[in-house]
Length: 319
Ligand code: KDG
Image (tube, rainbow, N blue to C red; front, side):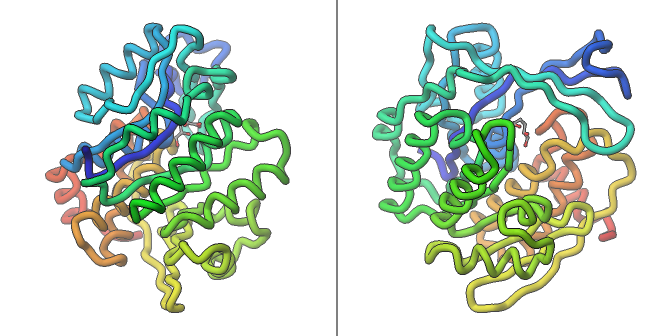
């Protein structure tokens, strides 16, 4: 078993190679492995930590591509089921010279949305140090949400440290109210909650990082730390004892694609904590990997090896 595990929906991503061309008009695409949680699994494995990814793929070329990519990235696939009845999800992403790209998903009723929670009974938790959860998997279907809640129970029973990224995807929920209530309920089970500042505003009604942090620190007894991601400004951190600090972000020369930065942030935080670094240094690493992620076109191709991370940290200046 691995030191780290996560559950999610893997997606075959076709990223346009044509800058500022609409998805309708673009003709040339590059294929990548994507999906918020698998991005985190990739980043953790790239920093030499054993990493396990839980999901279901279809018996189709995208499913085969994803399994190959997981093997190439040295990610454990012991708890991945396969089905011939449903397709693996895929998505199209355009390339923009400014701001966030548009993404078009083909995922409704996917193989992952039909994940059966019995698979989770096979998990060996003996070496697991940390697990990462995100608000996407519980949004893709009621079956996935039931499995997600069952995994939370298992993680609690096995006293595994958890991070939770709300990763809001409003199009996957039937209403804003359902999304907000469910995400806040799920967040209450995590030790570390990682909302983005815009997500905080949607989820609890304020853009004040301290108010967002206080909301989640009072939301459930499991939550000990809240880290509010401030984009290029870095991150605001508050812990249960009341201590708080801001860690500034790194300067990025050229932004190629913003998607995957939040997942990269989680990679930095989780790996540093698993290595015993203190919270402040862990957030510095989180900011660094977030900044590295935006400098390449796929979601996770910019995540560093240990050597690349050290080089970045030595050469970069904070904003
Ligand atoms: O965080 C990156 C994800 O947005 C992307 O990989 C696709 O998982 C995905 C999603 O649901 O948006």
